[in-house]
Length: 193
Image (cartoon, rainbow, N blue to C red; front, top):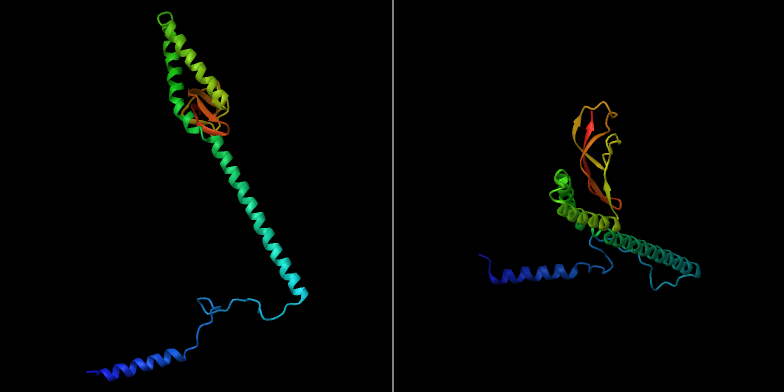
């Protein structure tokens, strides 16, 4: 069993070991390498000072250029966000436009019975179309025989049709819309086999 004197002796030995270790240099990093800093006590020549000044100016100019580039990118992103902020609003209005179009298409046969209702629906659809147009929403309304464009059209079926060329649009099921250069919804079409 160790006694108290042995513990004190070991403690004294550890203190001596600790005191004799070299003290760490504050300029050393975690892996023990020294930073390459100029010796501040050493007087620098005029050429060394000019070189250091040029180096500092180049770094400053690079930092300023990077700052300007970041600001330009940020301004461009803000402008894009502002321009397309209304995209979701127009997407939510598309079903209303579809409903109005369907109401007009389904009532054309019974126009003589519902003339006033049809006129009201047509006026509402026309007003909504004006709003779309004013804000840059364009209708994608391909005609039969037009070339199929996978960027603007969504083919939901293929049909045989000898009147139109292969891979052209055979019929339109639902118009599409785009807002400026962004697609809101592709036009639903059938394509000639």
